Structure formats: C-alpha cells, structure tokens
Length: 168
Image (cartoon, rainbow, N blue to C red):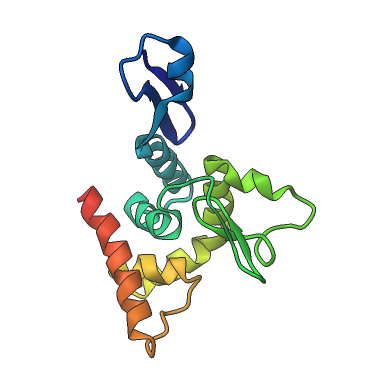
C-alpha cells in the first residue's frame, strides 16, 4: 500500500517499512521519502523570467543558491528573516502592511523580487558580466562579493556554477 501526497514543490511517498498484514501496524510504521520536484519550480522560474525579460538560467542559478528551490524556506537570524525562493528579507525589502507568508508562494516571490532586481540585472548585463558574475552580482543586490573573504567568494561561485552545470 502506498499513499502519495503532492504539494507544490514535493511529492511525499508514504509506504510501510515491512510487509505487515496489520493495517494499524502499517499506519504507525511508515517511511516518508521526499522526492524533490523542481520541474514545477523550473516552470515558474521560466515564466517569471520571461515576464521580466531576464535569462531564466541566471534566475535558476540564483534561486538554487538562495534557497535550493525550497519555496517554503524561512531563514532567521537575530536581525533578519528571509522568505521563499529568493530569500526576500521582510525587514528591509517587503512592505510591513503585507503578510510575509505571501512570499512562500513561488510565483508571488519571483514576481515580486524580479521586479525589484530588474534594474540591477540590466546594469550587470551592460557591464558585460558573464553568467556566473551576473548571477553573483544580482544575488548580492548589485554588490560584488567581499573580495577579502576568499572563502565566501569561492562558496558563492561554487554554488552558482553548480546550478549552471545542472541546466547545461
């Protein structure tokens, strides 16, 4: 017996751990497997990138770097709280009169943030940045990585390149 539950970003498969004949026993002994389903997110990335006239591959790499395609990701520190695919900081980048849970909707999150970063994206294109540099530039909101922190730069470049390789 298998039970499938489809959410916007994942498929959860529930299956008994053993071949028990007892339904009650099966209910309490289930193994939960999360199957990443980024094709749904990929379609949204392509749609929103086209709407904002941006290269979907750049946005794909940024989303991978920011949230690993987890539209429900909420990152919290003492001063910051960031939501969704593009990790929008609700303290500095989101109207206080709106519900931040809106940012957990992948379409809303991408539409909102891509409209905010379009100017930065266009500036990076005019600067002639290559794909990796452009994705880094946009994800850092127009600031270059801290070149004194070589490990930070290496991590950002490694992460972004990893997602470019996935789609190449």
